[in-house]
Image (cartoon, rainbow, N blue to C red; front, top):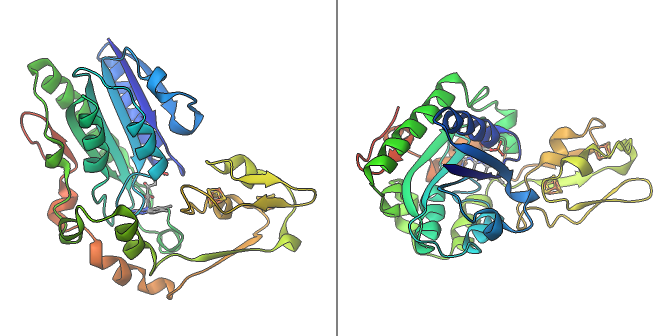
Length: 289
Ligand SMILES: Cc1cc2nc3c(=O)[nH]c(=O)nc-3n(C[C@H](O)[C@H](O)[C@H](O)COP(=O)(O)O)c2cc1C
Ligand code: SF4
Ligand code: SF4
């Protein structure tokens, strides 16, 4: 049996979960190919002939990064190939990210076996400064990922499948905004927290670490300093260049003081019950802890 795990991970959380899934599937006898979305030239070709398709991504403002959604939309139609979706999120909300990805796959003819959402450290600049969810995903999270694989394999063997709607967020903000243009919903989440990045060339030692670390390869090597297009991930900044810079050549200024971040994100934050829905599996609608 062949499985392919397609994933994007900008700061490493989703990659840890992808590895846990990979190891469990291998143990179950699968031949597994892990591929990063950003390294793919041709997703439709890479997905041909797999028995189990897995897509993983960080949640960005309640949804998968748009380039991941677009990649899934580019897949060829299949007849009932089994699929799973997984996301990591900073503990505020996984929003409708699983639902969106699963719906796209279902429209392409994939049979959804389940969805998994795992908390990671919040790598948004304010989240990092406030050390939100430091150390996550932890051992317990990765064990949950392994349990999820066992459960989806049971569901696969039993021929169960999941309506993607079972993966939709129960959080009021997403219930109310479902069906509205994604750009508008993202804008409401993004606007009050998005910081401005300033680049100070005098601090730059031209080590090119930022160029090598940019997941979208949107930084060019200039003559003496890097050159930024700031097009970033579908226009969304991941702040990886800021994090990795040894010269502290960037400053980020927040629209509101950093201490207000929890209050500003409370509008769309998950309830404790929603957070406890770590995995949802076909057949049993399981809500793993
Ligand atoms: C642009 C951006 C948007 C984010 N939006 C959310 C969000 O809506 N909810 C949340 O809980 N965390 C959010 N986060 C935090 C990430 O989802 C979280 O840190 C994730 O685990 C990162 O995964 P990675 O390490 O695989 O890149 C966001 C982070 C970034 C950079
Ligand atoms: S240039 Fe944009 S996409 Fe690249 S690392 Fe910086 S913030 Fe992320
Ligand atoms: S990581 Fe910082 S110091 Fe290195 S090239 Fe980029 S901006 Fe300059």
